Length: 268
Image (tube, rainbow, N blue to C red; front, side, top):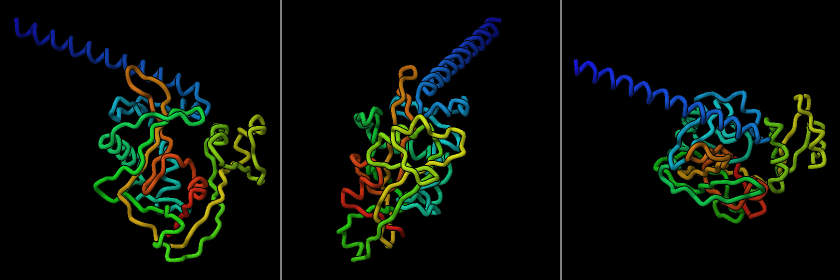
């Protein structure tokens, strides 16, 4: 009878722990939604948020993961099938699950950097983290690198469609990036109130860069930038800003910055 009582007591304790964990998770989810709702660039993700959207990635951080959204830019611009200039991940990195695993791996092997605040965003930057395996192809080369073997440098207008219209104000504040609409009109901060939110007008990031027709280099290096969104319990709530393979520089914020620093993009 005593053993039966002890078993019943353990079951009750396990059930209480389960309910407590569920309640804590629910509180974290509601807090995360509240943080996202107050963020103009990310508020559209609230409706796509699920209980699986909070991922513990270690080092006291909870990562915002929205399936088919978080890594959309990476899968569009940094995979070998992309025609956009830039470093490319190998084909085995085209799935969300693999890229999420890569984020966890970078954080596991590399100490968390000191946060930096750039244009109102608190960022964590991991640059040139070397892994044990090749992750992709590096397209960034110094213009005077002998590797280019005097190949012709050509101007290129880098143009990429903006999927998240609400992020336009933040993009405009991030350095020398130009935004144009589908009528080729340049959008400035004065136009923010007139941006078409219905989807009838497309908007593009436009950067003037330089490219060289040369092979890209295999690389084991990878770069990761996360944004700190707030606190969830005793952990930092973070979201992806970018992840890409190859050589990187923490002080360069976009492709045009790399050009101005003396780099070119090899096209492969």
